[in-house]
Length: 214
Ligand SMILES: Cn1cnc(CNC(=O)c2cc(-c3ccc(F)cc3)cc(O)c2O)c1
Ligand SMILES: [Mg+2]
Image (tube, rainbow, N blue to C red; front, side):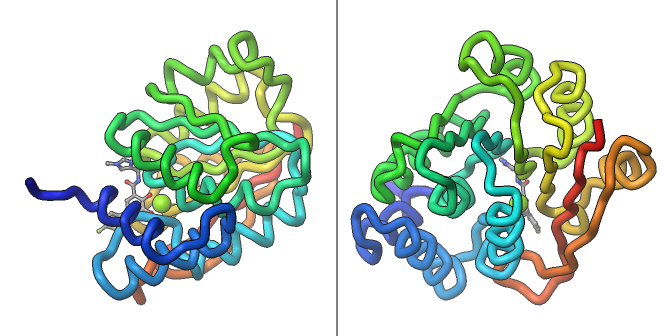
């Protein structure tokens, strides 16, 4: 029976990465997706920008919207301080099954909580169900038309601390025009665009970093 792309990505991790070594998991996925088949991981070029923002924020609690195979989940979690936690939301159960195994291979189960479901449904439950007070960093990488409604929902639920950071992938390709317009024009955010390229290609893309001013 035919394997899926996420299953093949997991295979590349199990074949080429060292158990318990998150950076080798990241490297194995990038090498596979660059040489064998493209996949929608944030990738190595934008990944370096992601690393620098994570290191600068040094977050205690991170929310990721859109897990996919867990590439950025592992990449972020590998940079977190000892007691920091990352919650990642994934709608697609087929992606979640793979991501859990990639996260386990990296040895990061204790830092990461993967929750299956739609962000719109789950975000209002994060405080009561997961004892979250407020997030220091939110990485948006799910459906691009959900970036704006979910940002408003995160604000309404008081889930972003003052000085907290939103970092959004794909603001050029596939694009999130309404989201960009909102964070760039709102007096409650200080936004900055990091020009880069769509993962594993020469196509322009970038990350938008927006600091919540409260
Ligand atoms: C199905 N699905 C479940 N989660 C999601 C959310 N992610 C994306 O949609 C996404 C898409 C692309 C992309 C796809 C085709 C193309 F030609 C150019 C770019 C790149 C990314 O980095 C992404 O994050 C989609
Ligand atoms: Mg993306």
